[in-house]
Picture 1 (tube, rainbow, N blue to C red):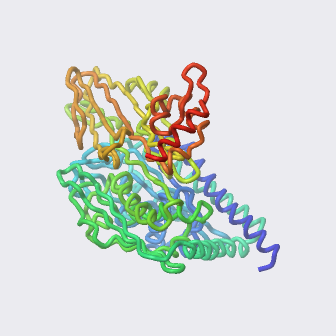
Picture 2 (cartoon, rainbow, N blue to C red):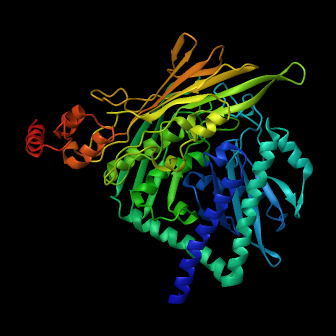
Picture 3 (tube, rainbow, N blue to C red):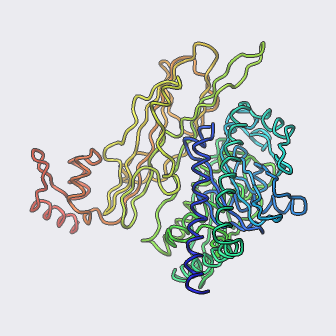
Length: 579
């Protein structure tokens, strides 16, 4: 490749990523449902004509997008027109959960399909027993929601109204569902226009050549970086405390094998699938499995099919990480996802202890559903109130950085707007703040725990039902650990309940006060290596107390002037080093 061609190709690689980012921004700006517009649970992607993933904006959707596109293109390979739009949410066909709908859109140049675009978003509701499709009681997929195989929403540029109505009427909020689909299509149309501009500016051959080069480059770079990792077999394990249905201590086992430029993640030995909604479909398993690899290799590795080709993942069928249909899977993007990532992270920490840190948060599930009597005597679930977004924290410190807020991929989710929440008439937020002395000490300290207190009033009309699922903090019970673990405490009238595992569909017969605590993160390195000025800053910011500064970091501060007492600090740290 000539130098000018190399420059143009690199420019096109950046433009591919920019187009994907613009599509995602369009979707977030125009979608109706809060999971997309506020929590940014969505993704956009670009594929080759063969369905190979070229670029994606959210690593959690990397495998989901790739597997869904492959399924759609394979099914409609000989009956696809350039103006078709296809849609699916099938978790046994590439999706991660029923709420996540994905559209696949061909990109045409002349009379030929030359590329594909994909848009995925978390819609509010698609049937099932519980609005929102998080159902801790589910023992089969049908109790979670409606499964939609790949179907044509548009055929030859014409909307199939019967198909749209069928999908919308399976949602408890058909208007929101319709608007979300329209936002996805609008985002895809932006992508189509931007790619047409590239064809005009660079020519079709150059654009398609650049897409193939991106995959080849990513594969070479990924394999080269894998080749720098220490050769060996490294094992990891994590435990899911419970599955909300009485099964406890479910084990996820993994072996990561690094051999020259080859990396294999093998989940052989993981427990069999359960009856609960914690089972992880393949797309979710693959996505969470590679998060630690992405961190170990560095942030500059392109996230596409080239990287995916460098990683082999073994997930035995019938296990927690590859359940058989029709197992429920609704909570997999939180749990089992967190445990999958943690098991792989533990294995990689044995290989490169200074290069990896946690990427997922041990988050609870917490929501309320409003019930109203409508259309005569029919009791309908009229609103889903998401409260889990008020759970922030759990980020570990790592070599070179302190822990703050949510870890890794969860950190792209913005904090919820308290003003918008309260303006919606769903109650009030009394507290949402960091807790002092909840960061594990280290040269780079962990992220502090957070506490949110929300008051839900008993509705004047109808009923409000609350569901909560909590997984104990990974480190809450470790000996000598002073950090705060995850906790949910609910006070209804005079009755106070600490959630130990699960509370399902509890009717609020009085005002409810909900206190949510998200545990702090672990520290990295020797606390005495942390610069005293940073410890002082943590004290000034209310993250570390005077007592903890002395006890954990050996930093002595003058309480009146808040200055560092240098000599006393040196003596204290010397004593701590001798102990």
